[in-house]
Structures are given as C-alpha cells and as structure tokens.
Length: 342
Image (cartoon, rainbow, N blue to C red; front, side):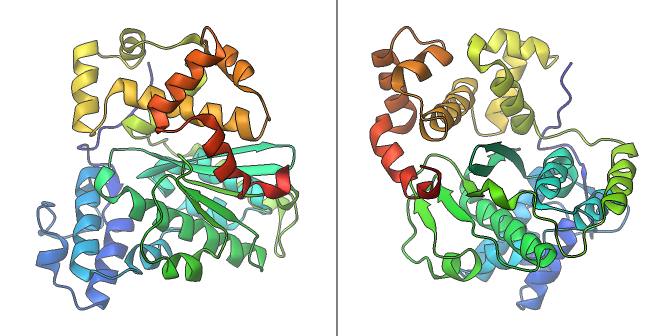
C-alpha cells in the first residue's frame, strides 16, 4: 500500500519552516495575530509541536497578504534550504556535486520541501528539475514555486561557489512586474509553459564543488536514510504513482485500491486537496508529453503511442483539452528555454 499524508495531518516540525516564516514576518513588523490568523497556531510554535501542511499553507498565505510585497516569496525562499532538519539538511550541505544534491533533495523532499515535491530528470544535454504540488495550494501556487526555485538557486550558488546558468519556465502567465524574478532568478524566464521547471545543461551536474568530500557525503546520506521516513503529501504520492503507471492508463478505482481506500473516499480526499483524479492524471500526461516532444524530440504519433492513444489526432485533441493549446505553440515556447539542447 502506498504511503501518503493528508494536508490536515500534523507532520511539519513547528520550530523549522513555520517558525522561520513567522520570524520573517515579524522582521517586517507584522503582528503574530495577523500572520497566524485561522491557522490554529496562535498558541505558539514550540519545539515539540507539529504543524499540518494546511496550517503552514494558511500561514504563508497570511504572510503574503499582510506583507503585500513583491519580494516576500523570494525572501522566504532564501530561508528554506538547506533547512534545519538534521541529517537530511546535513546531507544537502555535504553534497559534492549538483547531481548528488538534486538526488538528495528528491529523496528527502517530504522533510526538506514538504509543500512541493521536486522531480529531477536528465537526458542527453538537458537536466531538468520540476516542482509538483504536494498538498493542494492553488491560491499560492505561484508564490510556492518562487520560494522553492529561489531556495534551490541560492543553495547551489553557495555550495558551488558560482551562479549556475539556470533557465526557468512557469505554468503561470507572466506577471505584470517581474523585477523580483530577475533579481533572484535571473533573466532566462519563460511563462505559459505548462510546468514549473528549472533547466540547465547537464554538463553542470557532475562538476565537483569546491569543498566536495565523497566520504562526508556518503556518511551524511546514510545517516539521513537511517532516520524514519516521512510520507509525502497525497498529491506528491499520486503524481509519482500516475507517472509510473501512465502508459497503462490508470483508473480511479485501481489507484484508490493501491492507496488503500475506496474510490469514494479517494475522491473526497482529492476534493479536500482542491483537485480531482482526472485533473491529476491530465497533469502527468501533459508533463510526459512535453518531455517526449521537447527533449526526446518525438513526434505526435510517437507520443500518442506512448500514452496509449489510438492515433495522433486523438492525442492532439486531448493535449489541447489539457493545456488549451496544441503541441506546436507550447513546443515553440519551450524552444526558448531549451535552445542549448537543440
């Protein structure tokens, strides 16, 4: 049975990310009552308390509203990594290269980045990190993406001793003002790409970092792996499951069974996380199609066969239903991000 956590289950140590976000709000002269409104956390963020993801999401929403500043999500991102989660954070710091760091972040994401699940892919000249919602936060999804991208950019710059040539694509439309994106992420930005991703040439993955130690990295990884695992959020677990089974056209009934609940219960859980099964499946299919079209340079017929469609025309119609566009315009948008991969 697949392990997962619901948004309402307390799993995040209060003295870690929630406390850092609270201190940042206080540093901007915001009152606790405003920052913690409707979270149930006004009693305090003691070291032994656990916070539910839904509570932490509400806290972040409050912080964004109260501070009402375009740099808030980016500044919160600077506090996110490597974090203070003991062995998992230590394993990040000891990573001898970008590849090991990304593998570590993905392995221990439920501790290090509980709200968004990073996925790392590499093929040929392209290395890709993309972010998947773990608990359902449509109202602040854009801010969460900005937080986590900023966190990873900053951590890599610190450990690598230089700014890496990341390129960024966002599922959202371009904001009216992108100055903070330029300051914290750089100028290589594309919007309307149907996924939230960071890309760079794969040649950067295995360059040794200045203070690299394979032994220290291995010991830190072993220590982190020995600690009790924390289950991922429902949507992160579902994404991984659907990605693994995408070629077999997974059904709600089979998926619910593998998650250990009835279809009706599974539907209710997804509704509580502001989504539904077909929407999650369509997201996975979209991401797979984009990877095949853009990185593998597959044509519509090949993608249709991979995803189990009868023909290319059926795939194109479905792709337009998923994204609002046919594959051509989205490929053109991504070409600007992946120009070095062509």
